[in-house]
Image (cartoon, rainbow, N blue to C red; front, side):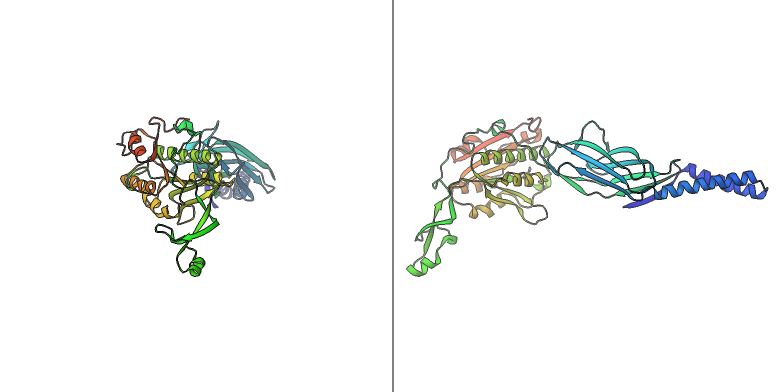
Length: 419
């Protein structure tokens, strides 16, 4: 907290007047003038002391009805003021700093000198030991982890001669999940959205369920060598696993919207990309897939890329939404390098979906290599802005489908995704 006391021009004038009255009364031995000077001086001192104590034992809090919300949901924000002293607060001016991406219903908010922040002002008074709560309704109209700033408060004496200001640090965040919609509204068929390609091994294997062993063959993964059986038989033996009962889906989300990072961020395309990823994850989980997510962005408070292993856990979709909500558009690794780094850990028979706002030749090369390795591949290209709609498309449905890659183009050049 930073406290400062300011003196108005009126109070300064009264101070000079009091000094003049006392001087004139003493010089000319005028008791009425001298007495009036003492009376005004006492009133001025009382006003200063009142101001000095006006913000003492005054508690200011900001509370939310929930810390996480879905896109488009309304959240209640409460400002709580508690005057825990016998001295009333005749007036209190409040300036609350909120993120510009959060909309306050039925109340205007003014811009501030801070980037992407707005200010909500209010005025109230508190009696001794009184508690006052102000409620506001926030509409979560933008995905992200929104940080709320400090609350500036100002009060003073009942005459307004002195003012005391204080900045209350209230670091809080509101996490807004990205929006998701039925995949049909994206132009993706609900039936077989990932194509009808059947991999050479229809189901992924479960590494926890060993069926038997056989002699090692070229192309087998060294990770699955059974060293005990190898020692007994004198030749390399490979583990055979039972097929997994649930198909696995790996979703790769490319948060880059340009081929080169220094070109900036196309916000509309990024938001469209995240909406598509969230929608596909929701659809796949409802269809019984084990869904995993990887994003070429560092996880919160970590130096690792976002990586969620495939799962059908009831909380998996919430985890996916939380990670997508925190994507800001600056990556640490190109998408093609991320896929190359992870390709060895992807089980055979798993389906891969790559959602990206920019398709480069390197991305296409690595996807074709995965297709030749036996994976079902779906590429979804997003175009969320007029600028992106004018780019030359490297991928076309005919050429990619001929190579075994299912391709979709999701676009709305005028409004990003008007749903």
